[in-house]
Image 1 (cartoon, helix red, strand yellow):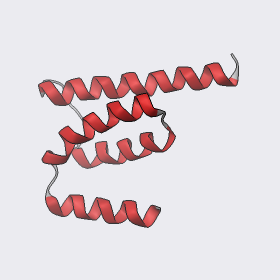
Image 2: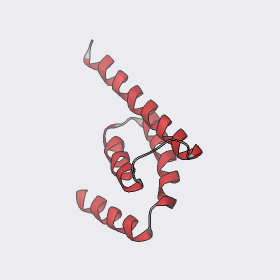
Image 3: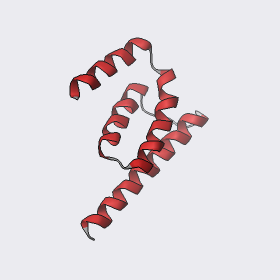
Image 4: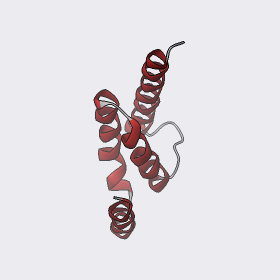
Length: 84
């Protein structure tokens, strides 16, 4: 398998993984990690993903944010700013 094929496969995997997470968050029927953990995973995924995956991840983030307390969001944003 070439490097390009491997990259495409891994990108598709990430996109499908976040599509399942989106479904779980939307329906509330499947167990998901804590919102703070999902935000950290979303950040990591966005760092390595392509546009198609980023759109799916951001849809999840819009469902995660209301579940997180404002103080937790502030802490997360501060941590994110210091990483940049």
